[in-house]
Length: 341
View 1 (cartoon, helix red, strand yellow):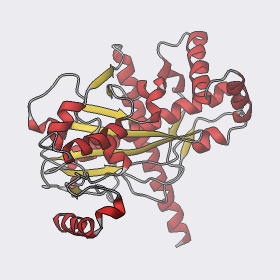
View 2 (cartoon, one colour):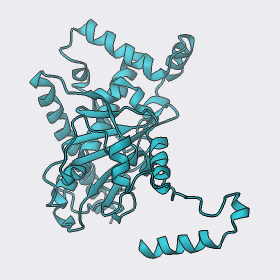
View 3 (cartoon, one colour):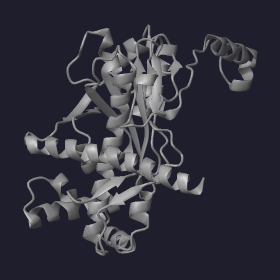
């Protein structure tokens, strides 16, 4: 990393100032990729300040974006204070082939190691390919709202019509493993397939809404998996107790509710704020990146889980099933491989 930084400075110094239109001595901040800039723009957005330095190592950041009418949870970021990792201890059910993704020193915050992962296009198959999707899109357009807003409204009306104790229980008989484009992480299994369990012949918009809800829940359970693995693989991590998030999907209240407890930043454009923080440090407004983040990050809304203990028990049970869906897939794959060997 230090060699890369020195090479970068050499390249910058070799470029004529006139070519860039900059005056000599103009501070220039090194750029970050969008997700990392989002992390810088949100990671100190805590509702209650914690003076402990280790506080940063107890946070998981979810950078979430829309992708067409599918769902995309783009990236998870986690920071560790040192590199004493015991990856062999990590496991997902009985899967032995797991490892931490992209372990890099100082790539986002000085003196911290960054590990990241993500999942792609997790809802595209469910929503785009459903027979009710064109009708739903037309209805949403006629009401001048998004497809997601209409799906959320349908689910809210179903809760009232069925007198359900809470919204999540609508998917009691439906489960989705959203690996329709393989599993990018933390399993890193390109052969992984998506699973939708509990299908019927119902082709209504209500049934599509249920599949959408089950997919959002699957994304939330997938976010919990790397947090669990990192806690196992890195003994210095006592507990990841804070989930911070930024990105377009934060505009979806259903997505947020299925990820509680979750802290939202006060600044809606956290990626832009992260880039501005880099500029503030480059101009020597702040002495360090961490000082700048503490000064400029701020928490906004904090969404808590429901007080009803049945809600947690419900999600705990579905999370166990979420694990089993992948384990069963591995078992089925092994059976077929033995037959064809």
